Length: 170
Image (cartoon, rainbow, N blue to C red; front, side, top):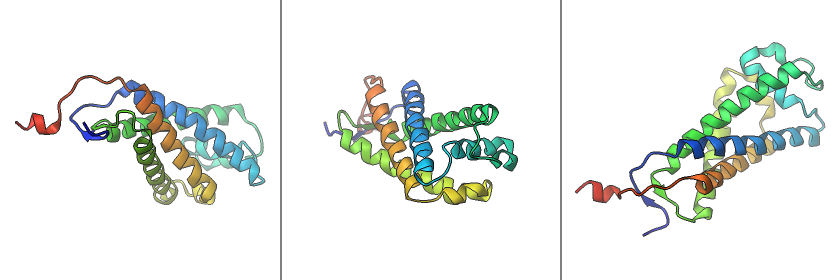
């Protein structure tokens, strides 16, 4: 059997959600670190994320810690991270990666790139403040998000016996 054979099966939703959370933690830490390394505030990303639901008024004073902003940002961020994990689970479920960490990581990296371009070039029509966060550090954080999510999903996925799509066609 090939290490990434196509099969017909549903994602392990639990594994996908947990993978999204784990990748979301790594992403948020990288994003906050990158903000500091670029001379900004570690809290700037939380203000940008909270503004998705609170509006542009949440963008004021990004250098300040605001518990309300942080709580809203964490809820929004992890809801999105779980959603992204579930979508990645849908993408990965039909394939038997077995122990093919390399292939899972490639799928995750490509997924992270796609999410970056959707978020920072498509969604900026609705949330224009994210345009200022475009750049290599944010791109890298998204690629790492995808890799962590894919590898975590591969590790956490509960595999059940299933049939090849070719067997099901018979």
